[in-house]
Length: 454
Picture 1 (cartoon, one colour):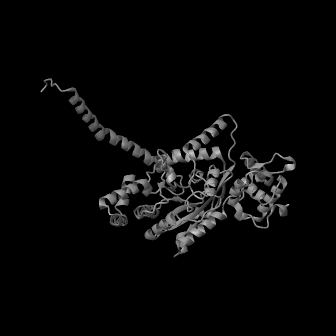
Picture 2 (cartoon, one colour):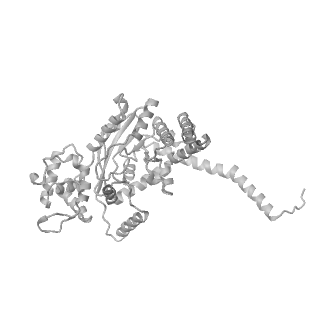
Picture 3 (tube, rainbow, N blue to C red):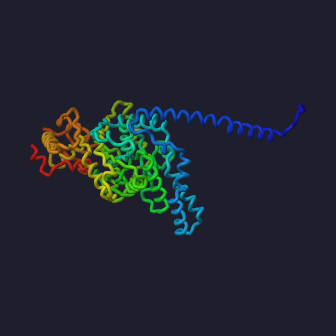
């Protein structure tokens, strides 16, 4: 029993390896998983104490469990059978295709990543780039039933929209964004997925994919997940709000109808003194397609330039960025209504609360005929008087200072020249002015012209 046994070195190493794996799988890994699970539970418990709308259990479920629930859903199973019959592939192949779609769509939400990294990072980045303002917050939002599913519906000006709204809504709820194809890049995709966002292929025409996506959105809606969607389906190319697309809104409404749960849509309007991607978006609009020419090298170069300006003390923030939360719309209060009617009403409410900031205000004045600082100020003052329902942000509560801020920002972009005598303002880049002025054109009555305003 105590005799020495000789073994080949390779066999001894193999036995030792099996022993280590067995120890890890039976003792070490369960302990580590338990530790992180307990830590995550404490984070959720701590966060829920301060949130207006606590994190929903559906959102905290294991990603694997949600994927299994999704791919074995009866409607998805029927879609798999139909897809197999239409394409001529075996049903098991079609099923694996559905599984791949589910794995692509379903997020893996982490409360720690969202609140300890995401919201803090969003706050830092928003304040580093802009002077952030909450232009309007409708008091009716405080009266929304805790049993209702809340869906934030936003206009889409910039990819900073995600960051800005995440920061300003961080004390109210954890948002689940619908994110387009641009974010499906490693390692960005993993980070976005842990933040609770789900990926969508906006141009996919596969009935199987649409069914998997529809069922996930309906499940999330029925289980009360707070969502954030961009009904325009993409970034604005000209500064205006675009006609809404019905896909996600329709899925949300179907989820509400199936569960009997009320859905409260919250219109959210964003505006900027500078949209980071403005020239890229304008070029895409001028070319007639949505193929953005922003290479990763261009983005990295821009970031490095701003970093260099900051460390050399020459960095100026990009003006103001503002968000308005408008009057909520309860789906249950509408009764039987079409998706088109709901979408139209939501876009109307979004346009009504778009913040008016210095750069769009000055751009509107210059395009209306103002040619010097005095006439720009007269126009701005007239618009402020006429558009009393608009949410106009005047820095220091001064029209004169707002005009100064707007002109300074446009001069830095080389869109105007204010170096002439007697306060003359020369327009250099009319297209850029049009892009920013378009965001507030609904607040500029036809009879408010630069000459008449003086």
